[in-house]
Image 1 (cartoon, rainbow, N blue to C red):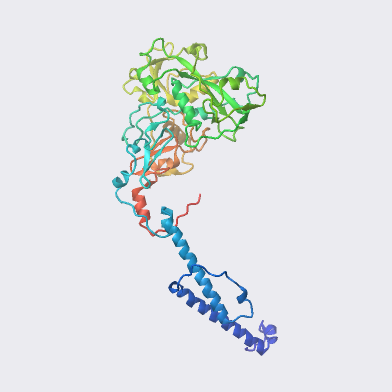
Image 2: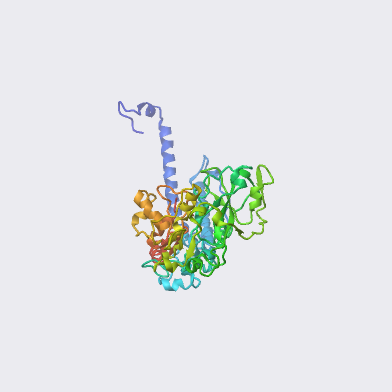
Length: 505
């Protein structure tokens, strides 16, 4: 060992080391370097070695001092064999999994035909009329208004409006028939002042009556079943009991007719005698303490009107979710005895053509009120605000409306629309509401309107489809929650080096 110079910081430590200790240190360093060189050689040639199906358990006893270079080499060789056997076993598992994820992990590219028309043939016929064709799996993805293998079965057929396509849109851009959006019955505005209704309260003994325009009772019943998730592939699971004050009920006015609502609007009361036959349906909701949860609609038949008005238990409302009771028909009601109809009279429904060639754009009904001579459009987009104003006794038939002929107001697509706060200013909020509430106040994704607005659909469909009830109905060739998937994107992605992709949110 070299002698340290005068003033070196290691002087004291080096002076204590003898020549024998320095020699042993040199030997240990040499052995470690030799072992490292041997390990590099073994790992370089491990692919040429035969793979053992089994290996003895690893033991570290031979690595404890004293040890020799031969023992170390043997232990490292066994470790390399175990690693090679593990890699071979993993490759066998991945080869047995027939999923694209497994092929990506195994670095095998997934071959896809580059022609969209060839992929489109794998989807059921008429899928793109009401749904989105997943060109990767051949599955037809439906929104809340349709179901079935090809999305051809409507879930709310009595709410059909037979609206023509928007200007510039094709048949592939939107559904074959639009429906009234009655998701406002699950909003905070609709259930305002209905929490904590105790036994003996006037709101329980004399339930409130709510107005939603000229809408058939079957349209209302089907909407309740859809928005309560009773018709969902996995229906909501209800408890066996709920607190008395957490369940609310209101009577919703409707027209007792077997016609779809859109057909009733087109014909008016010409085909009827004595005007419209009005009735009501009891609508119940589970109202948890605000703002913990939005109102949750109860399916038809789960709790009856009599059970809510005269509960058997002073604190709990007991029911069986598996045994839904028979749903009674809508009950008749005298509309002229209710305010404000005692002052303005019942609406006289006229055929849509009498309101003009635009026919209210099939987004409203044509009627006259008491004292009016010319019929005018009553837009379905305003039913929730009108119903709320009637409860405040501040409603009167408006001479002018923000939508004189219920015309649509589609917003042009802009790249900034996918940003979280893209609807923040007063002008943006107004434009958003005019578009989203065309067929009724849209409260499907957000029961309480907030600023910035909650988007109607994910990323506003990226400008590649029509948003309806939170579902993006994409143009042919696109699919996904926001119409972000396409054949071109798949070919571009799979043409790159296959590697695992992890999305964190």
